[in-house]
View 1 (cartoon, rainbow, N blue to C red):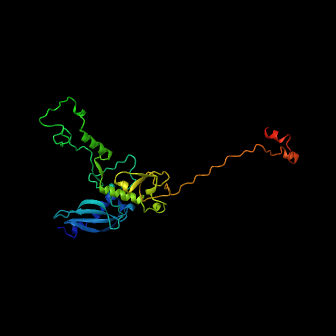
View 2 (view 1 turned 90 degrees about the horizontal axis):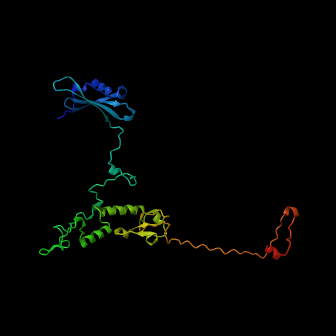
View 3 (view 1 turned 90 degrees about the vertical axis):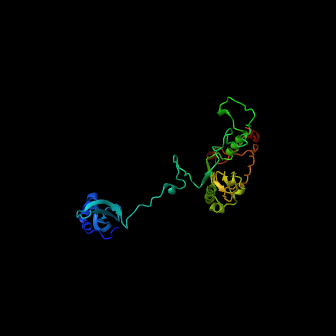
Length: 303
């Protein structure tokens, strides 16, 4: 059991501890003596103020010790430790918790944990039993009936096509987007819906000031699956949500039916009067008045 009372001989070795601190950091970095603390039987730590400007509130801790029945104090270690008022760096946070939306840039890789709750195993077809396997179901093994002749073929295995049922299931699965090892779980889908609802939902200031919702907008692009019941994609290039997944309750001033632009009136055809003649003076500064045209008006009009 460790003693809380510092060993007398080790506690008196203040100069030995100071010399060790000066040897480690220099005389200018070691300040006033703070005190001694017992770390165990015949083990004492001496503390000195650190004068380094970058380590305000820190202290030099020099641990000394001695053997049993020995009066010789030896140096154990010299370290720089923070005090009660020391300036410390923020607590380290893993990168997965520090990551924020938009931090991922070109060339960056964002690994996904195997147990990510936002994902669940999907259907990729890799775990399906081949049709010629002994574990195939009745549909796949219907072509082979014991006691009947079996057609022998010299074609390689790679050229043997799967049964129509298996091929149809695979085609439909890929069409539905199920040909992936993992898909969104219900939790991941709900988290995404809440995130999109906060950005482009019915409670946003843009939607509150909109003349109508996206439900009746002609620029709304429907999406498939369960998301199509509450979300769609905006296709209006002048909308702030262009190309984004928006809630059906969202809206903006670019609604297709909010205000139909009236057709501008077509200007009338220009009328040219080629029969009347307007007299114009050729040299008003010389004549001081208008000059009457010479010749008949009909000839001047057709000249």
